[in-house]
Length: 392
Image (tube, rainbow, N blue to C red; front, side, top):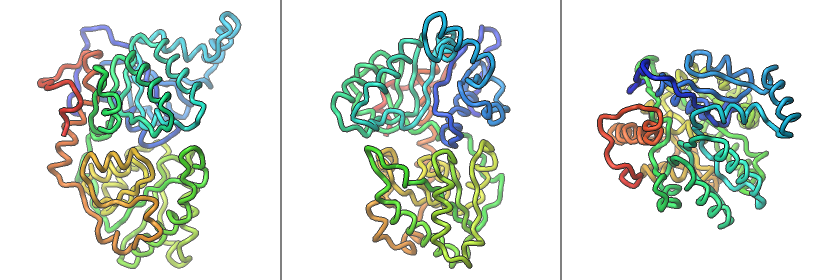
């Protein structure tokens, strides 16, 4: 990765990574980018044992797990001595020089009663010697008190870098806040490694179980029907169709099966399916080999752009809408328009992000790490302005 530095002459800092780790491609990719950017730092994460296999090629990352005997012994000890829960996790944070919270939709108000969520983030702040948040968006939220509580909390962080201008504008009065394009724009894509095929790749999400505060299940029928029809249109034009699931735990594979069930049996047997379970290289190959991407998952859109593919984003959340608005990308579909959308027309309208715009995004995405660069001792030739509103 560009910008790697060695720092052998100094003591290696120990940093705890706080992230959503459920074998979700986007979150795993952000952790990987972070670790590879700072090879001189000792990172730790708290996750299931499976992550020792997923991240086995990252030498400066140690996976600690609540499934380990060591963790269970420490949890029991702290419960007995201090009557505290998750004692091992807390100890890992306290023994670290700092915590980096990488995420995406980490600050969405899912429930009217949000006190427990705010208190959990306050606890993380209190446990951490230093705390930085990278690559997040704020909201959606419906309670002004939710916003005010986080405004007070963010002021106590050592740095907060949002991935969209809308979130930044909410907190622009805080001196420690900036914004930059998503962390994944820092991923060093190696174009030309695999030959492009006449293939269209569909990244989908499951909607039936998304029935909370911002219910999406009401769009399930229209969404699955549109994707199925567009897949049939692609096959009629000689395209190989592949469905990819980014996160099995969140139901991506269930969505794929539901959509396949809407496609006529004769065409259904030719559809290919792939589910990410930790093999990043295999997933990147699918993107490079595909000509077109229909992306519902947020990072499927970014990966499509990075590989210079024709992309049709399907907007299911404000985070995607803000991404498209920040980049003035006009060819997309909102959930509420799917029922009336013409799959054939949308198939023909798909376009790629201009290369000049992509290059700007890749350069500006470096700003995601500016505050952390100072903390971890990584130098930059040109710092430029420190505030996020200098990004176009």
